[in-house]
Length: 183
Length: 309
Image 1 (tube, one colour):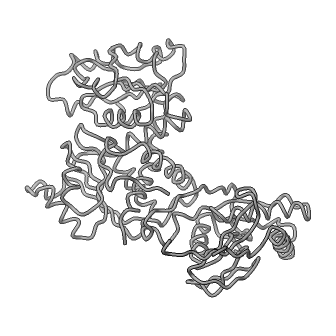
Image 2 (image 1 turned 30 degrees about the horizontal axis):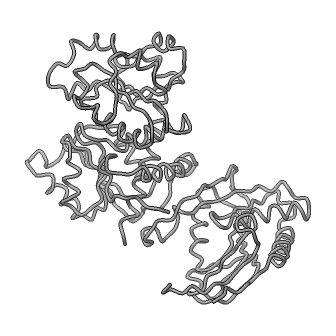
Image 3 (image 1 turned 135 degrees about the horizontal axis):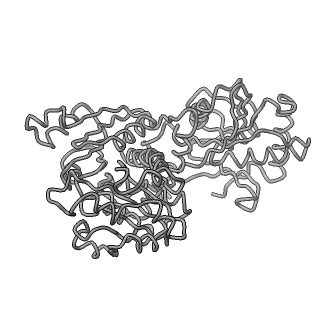
């Protein structure tokens, strides 16, 4: 079956713009806020957000980092093949900061839980907010909700959300694919 | 990600270059972790690891214990000098008794070569070799190669001279396997009595003259003379050994180039290496120790990934 397009490149741009304005509403000049992209895929969204903040309002002083959560996952040793760790780049303290975690897809909430654990190893933030591009509601394993949502979708477990970026895949788009388990 | 091709780390000889690359890539992440204010991750919190040391050790044992604790594993320590081994219990019995207390991984140092291989065939746990007699010391070789990679960018094409007691050294053998797999050239240097007879069959060249060896190399790994393993006299006196094979500032200055000095520890200052060199910026001895924890965390993590829940 052909994958269904959830967001095309124009819609992604509009969505990111809207999310940026929502962030500006709550964080004004970002002086005590930091943006952290969750490795590996959340960083594509967070980098785009940093770019867009600069483009829209000339905000270019946002403290920005990338957080790897591999060692904090709760499915270590449950997978056949372990996940590859990526690098963490956080060169500032998050003590007393308002942290905005960024990921591409919110599904079971387990990645977010791991990210919250990982975050605490860098200090005690004043608050933590969560931004996702796609929220797959009704499929949560844990009581976790995002503060900023690009698009909420209804999907079943056999479906997979694929987020493509023009830097990596030549085209910005979000697809919903039906994964045939027999294939 | 790919996973290790082996279930136990018994030696460098039976792991692949891909395994070594994977361990290094994982160690990069752990090195970042141990340089943070909170040096701990929860990955191994549901595993118990026994450190069985049938032979003395400070560095390796502490390094393993720290690595285990920084991965949040539970750790039990055991040393042969204060145990029932003295009462005549066999190795398999000792280990099976420990495993009956639900231990998942065993880090073992043993005076007999092959003790870890023997154990891995008989007990149900992941075995990590922390040195078996004069056979292998895989994590030391990995951290040595990792330190060379860190200092020189790559191990491939580098020239490494291993100086000293090659005959009794598990560090030398593991280093040779590891460095060759990564594409480095290795020479060994020492008095003929301390060079194993068939070492050249491993593709290693032998150099009896220290100065010539140093002029050739990029990195010199100075090994300790293991007097405790020498049952006969291999050279006339320690003083003569130092005159022929000891590294001092005059020799280093005479080379006309910079080389990196390594030492697996413990150092006998004034024997294989003088104090001023050991403390100089050319020596990366303490860097090796730091990298040891990261490498051991990587190996423990990757082997633990193979224990299914």
